[in-house]
Image 1 (cartoon, each protein chain N blue to C red):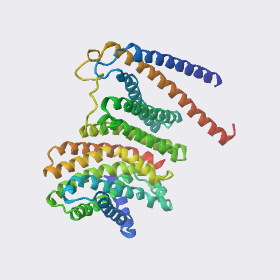
Image 2: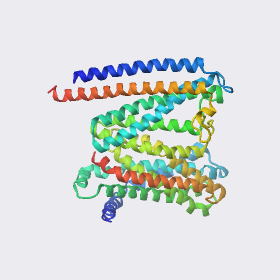
Image 3: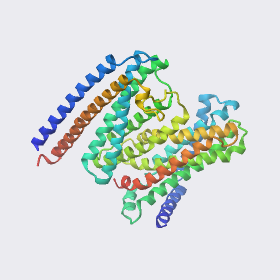
Image 4: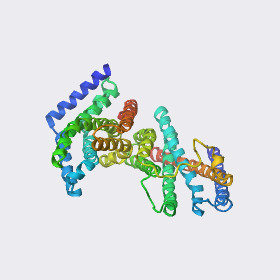
Length: 225
Length: 235
């Protein structure tokens, strides 16, 4: 309980910072929207093909915007030696992990909440009623992304060329999440219900649970290194 | 110190000689003595290299995982050197596997590369552990690099079953495994001479692997010694 209270407090700090500086969220959102335009120029997406391509393109947009957010995730702590102060304070290191996972998850979900309908409008899709189910799949995938992404954001924090390094080691590890979300979303868009997609969701859930636990246990060593 | 060094050096040389000898025997058996495959013909002989190299690559990544866990737990330099050495040789063997597979795939499937589950999995392993090497090269502080590498070594290994499952569901074209099958024992499915050739080659590559690992480990130790000498001037 104490752990959650500490995490909530750290999360509140990040919210306040974001509210006052408005750096990550705005950048991530506009980058995501920009990507949709780039996709249109690259693929000339017609209304018929849009539904077929939606899962892959949406996930590409989420992956790129999410990576953008991750590279900034520990920036505030790096400035002014805030991280040293945090590590000196008598708190559980795992609470910092939980706070950072939640914060990045929150940012990405907000961006997705806007990008999803924007995609439907820009590419003239009509299946609005499927959006809640699709968003749920995206939520599970985003959680998996944040769980590992936060851990490796801390791993690469003190490396040279960290912005380049992070996607390089994160994306191969993300393959189960990428495949599972895209396939599940495809099934939903094609048949209108989850159906066989349930197996993919179980895989996603397994991924989330395994790496949330692993990250929770390992983070302490990474952040102190 | 010097005496144990000499002893270890002699042990390595013997291991290397044994590896060389068994590889020659294995190649002779695989390329000459074993019968050609009933369907695939001579090209199937590449399997005598292909299966040992991929098994060794998996073994290597398992060693990275174990050594990484040990390093995080006990913080001993030698565990990190072992993890790093195993990762490096693991990449070598994964790369070899992909190249051999391509050479076999062209005459058999008609393509150098196809997005089949096991091919994809091998390529992803290659990418994960290339990421490991790049991560290590981009972190200057030695201890920090070792910890970060260990984390990637552990997470990467834990991820393998999940990647495996996802790419399998995604697609499967690779012929089903003929050695480790749930319904048949190995000797019921494969000609005994072929199985023998495969076993000899596997043993030969295992010896080669441990020779390379011992050698690379020693290089790592010597790098550490040089660093220490540079820092403290031999005191």
